[in-house]
Length: 353
Ligand code: MRU
Image 1 (cartoon, rainbow, N blue to C red):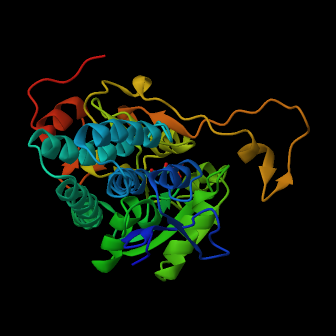
Image 2 (cartoon, protein in one colour):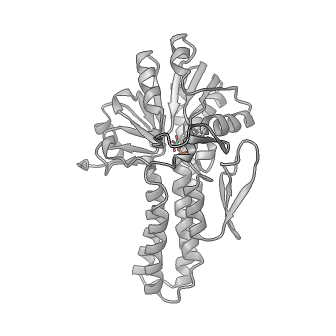
Image 3 (tube, helix red, strand yellow):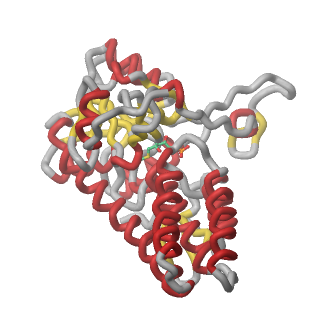
């Protein structure tokens, strides 16, 4: 299994995804500020991996705190959580991860637990979330594999694989599971401008597993769909609103429209931690704007004229009407999503804007 991130006695070790596929190197974060930098700079990326990194960031911040009293530590925890939460706004998993570890802290602090007890408990929680993320990916694979064709080519966008999770992957996990069950699947990986998660990361991790993979430029899918060369699309998600609208890597919306036009199923695979029942619809999801440099430059080389205007939204929102099904570890959701998500959440009332 690809070691995306790992809790070690010395710190949290991250596979440096900015260096892939040419270099397989690691970055060791020894405090919460370094974890925040690792998330912001996309050394680790992908919603589930960001979520567990956020959880581990809070845990390492508490574990390494020099605070000598509970009030002092409580103040510090607020600062740690705020710092980590300010890294990337779109993947709701980040806030879920931070809140989960903070919840353990709050509970133990309210009971008057000792600082060493609290430190041990938050680390245990973060490490448990790591294990649960891998288990969720495996379950998504089991739940979604039969949706993929027995034989054919599946298009994916960005990287929703082992690298975007703690292991196995969400969308790529479903592909892996289908192959493990005997499906004969080839993968088309959109290159995914500007950060090239498809060309660099999806291609790298699928080739490591011997899964036949072909990289497409982002403008090629329409023509290949028209030629009947794509049988299904599967992507991950950064946040799924209560009505089933899906925020994912920029370009996903276009792929979803193309799939609908060509009668191709469009699947989303995401752990339940990506479902944000507190956000009523996709229009309310904050979309991260990243630096112009990611667009103006490629591999350090300037590609655009000085001073030209640049847009760099990192994500877009695919309206629920384009989504054939959402595969989670709890089960497969289908339209009408407001109802199916509500049922799966075990909720009685949906949040409204
Ligand atoms: O900017 P990134 O690389 O963090 O974006 C990642 C994606 O958009 C993934 O598709 C999404 O997080 C799902 S990962 C299982």
